[in-house]
Image (cartoon, rainbow, N blue to C red; front, top):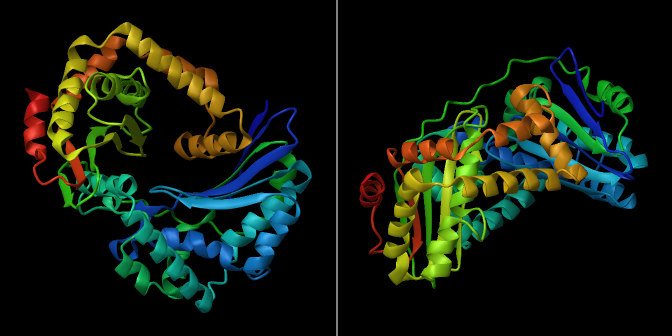
Length: 419
């Protein structure tokens, strides 16, 4: 069997998948500590910590970290999401031990030098400023905040500037102590990898860590609402959100297929109706973001000021119409797109390693791809129509940015959806 999992007594897990014929591998540590694990006064600290991991350890300076991975032609990076912080590398097969050692070092032994904290603080503040100047980026943060107000799931990953400006070394070390226990870590590797060799190395690096209780995040409560930011821009940016199941719910496959039919490609309903037939926008798409206990269907479009009302009204009408006339042909096309996208993506060792870590975190096992395909194939048009019907009875979320003074409010759209 190419997929193997080893669980250490302290809760640390190793999952690997050998991919024959490859000369390279992707390896990383996925930590179950993201934005939603922060207290309100910590908002932004998980992302700050991700940056600081590369700024030096007890054994390596920031320059040595960069040089060691690039000396072997490798690549190292990290990201922070609402539920996970990941540190990962891509290297040739002979350099897998180096990659594991290097990633373990930056995760376990960061020094948090005060001078480096100040340097990176400036970098992150620039990143926040850049996000604020990118309408089709920041609008999704505002949508999330309106959908989950006054709770961790609704806060931004980057955090507010005033919080980031105040973080110090103690804030970083406190977050690590609270959230970086071995039970929250998964070492995942795919490609030209030897499971037993990686387990031996992981045992020497992580096996001594004491087990610690996991800090469970606050449960999410979708509420819906509106965020409107008026600014003189060339385009009006519109994002709509709707309550959806989390990734542990079997209905997540129905939700994803519904999103694909509505706005997953050029043949989707919203693309055809809003762009191709009426010319209301250049970009429009729909997607589902899923978390452990909730999910969010997002519809995004950029349009002219005078077309905002028509575009949002059309979107409500199309979502409502799906409950009545969703066809088997549309659902079959979406199923095929979903399966092909998943399978094509898994031809990359980086995508494989990511999937392994994600599914082990969810189910503590790696479901065979055939099981996932069967769940996708089990979704029919009747299930998608029923899903659409439930959506029309819920509370939408609306985020607007740009020349949106006269755009319809969320209550007007809710009534249109339920009509």
